[in-house]
Amino acid sequence: MPLIDVSIARGRSPEQLRALISALHTAAVDTVDAAPENITVIVREIEHEHWSRANVTIAERNTSKTTE
Image 1 (tube, one colour):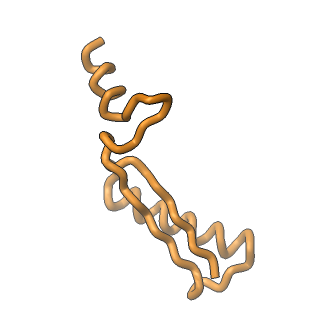
Image 2 (cartoon, one colour):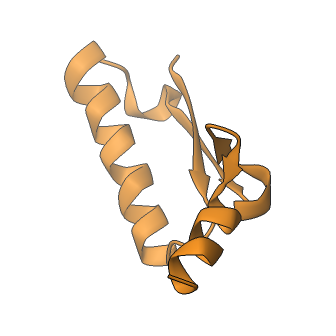
């Protein structure tokens, strides 16, 4: 019973998120022979201010790109 939990920065369209869910579902069926009815996919959208890499948030990176 696969549980696929994905965190992604907020900002994708509903269509993009739906395509992601579908692709993950299909990957679980194809790669680990999971029964489709037993697959759960959770997509967590994270605010840009709450996601950082190398001590810089996405919001900070986006702000610095617009001021360059």
